Length: 409
Image (cartoon, rainbow, N blue to C red):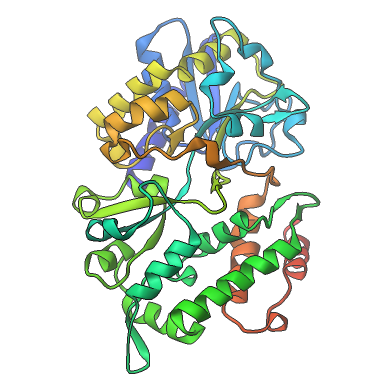
């Protein structure tokens, strides 16, 4: 994967050499946009697109230092109206239709009735399991926490004070812990820098702790099983019958090798009729200092067309790019017709299995440095807090965040 990305970045560097007043420059943390730009440049000759990789595309953005388009995660925050132009003029006859987008994603890019950002792609959480066990699940599309717990308890096998089989544990994956808090309405959101519902967060953690003790007996037995058997990837443990479920996100699910996917089935995680859209959804915006208006709008309108996204996916498959990048920009397309009509042609597992979009839970607006806060503050807190019996054994989240912010100004 590292060498694949390096090749894409080299292509992006080549594309940057296009010198023309009709050239659109994109800053992005999504390497596949170099491929999309190259395709666009080859199918028409009126405009050119160049791509520059930026790990944090909005850093140092301003007059005299601005691309025409930015494509990335974490664009939607209090700085959005400062950095980006409203895009309402891109909707209408012969342009974009709001009905084409998933409404939860489109509304997340809107502030004060102005559309500043356009959604590109998103992912959702799932559980994978052996196809041999499909018949014991109650729903063809989704699974909730109660059913995971029930099936896991039946699956568990204990011998001489330790588990030899375990259905599932929330402690196996910090992303799953975080998903539980989101579905439990912890509601992490932008403030100064971050706010959340403390009561809901505590209830979510209590729910996880009770799950561990009720289904897997204790934290110690849970962790002993993990350290003993998770020297193998989870999908292999499923195939061998050692575990029932494993947490996975949609972009990883559809990049599993064919020999593994042939043995596995999946269900979308849904609790209280909510399927969370993972917060790293990719958005596109036009910076206020963008210069090539016609060329910029031409590329955006071209890219956000159902037929053109089908062609890009076909191009990716024919060139085996889809072995490294799922769907459009590493996720489900934000265009609902692409997801419903096009994706099953490339991912047969989705035939009759598309996630029920009416249940999508819109992600909150988060601070621009959310990815660092999540990885260095939220995840360590959840990891520690779900492995102790008493709250006072763990440094409070508020103190951790304040301390981290003080050291990372």
